Image (cartoon, rainbow, N blue to C red; front, side, top):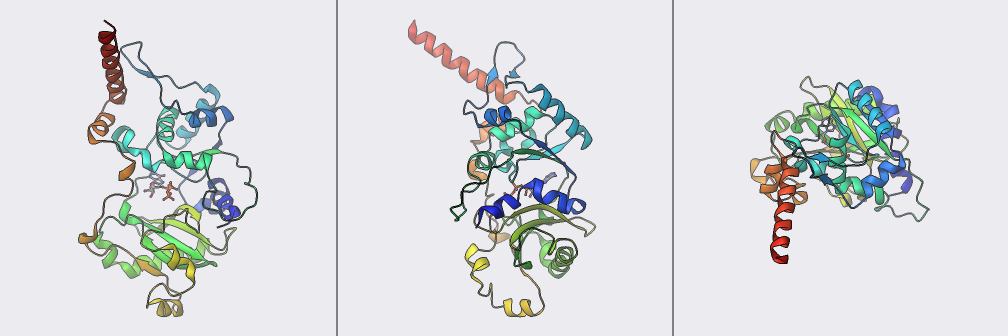
Length: 317
Ligand SMILES: Nc1ncnc2c1ncn2[C@@H]1O[C@H](COP(=O)(O)OP(=O)(O)OP(=O)(O)O)[C@@H](O)[C@H]1O
């Protein structure tokens, strides 16, 4: 994979091209001091002076005002991303285990807890095999209008030389009966969407797009990713997708009819644990971070700190 492919898949590059077919979003350049804060290993610092805990993140008044204005323009609830990734691996820390944010501090909490966000900031070209110098990146905060997407409606589409060669159910850990019963209809709707709105319109001829079919059957673009290892190949392997050989015995038939290979989880027996599970912390801790009180987790941390200090004092005595 070339660095240029990664550069082209930044949100601010693809969004203007496909604006009419995706979720409304706003892009704010990330000021350098905010990037430094996100990268700072001191992570989350909580003040414990008063009975009401507050997050003692540095203040960024100007940036905060811009973010709040953007959130308001997107009806008050947003899904946050950086140039490529969302903090999908950090949802356990948020209120209600959701990526939904209403303020900059909620965005910070997710971003600072996410390995995917750190990878965007520190190693965006990790899977590239050309030895050209790393292109300069202007980091950006992407705020997308919050939309309740049903996981069974999400599909990942692999495009090679501007042809849609493969489609995978995105949430492959679950079995969705409507997918097997409507396989043809779903596949045709995605192919039609691709041909009418995506094909030949992007800067590269190889890429991966995530789409969503809503309850009315309408297809939307959710995200665009590089065609290569940095992107999860889900129910395919990258060897299959890149080798040029047939994906399956059906591929000759599919090619004749210009139909992509469509894979989905076919029975409940194959249901697997969630891929982000390894990013999580123990259940007790998760319980503390969910629920009605956003500061429960903070209180817990304070409690632990307090106990530690008591123990230390006892030792000294
Ligand atoms: N605007 C939105 N509102 C609510 N949920 C969303 C929104 N956009 C995306 N999601 C959910 O978050 C998931 C991840 O979104 P997205 O593909 O943009 O993130 P990503 O980090 O780039 O993921 P990947 O690394 O798999 O490409 C989607 O599968 C979808 O379920």
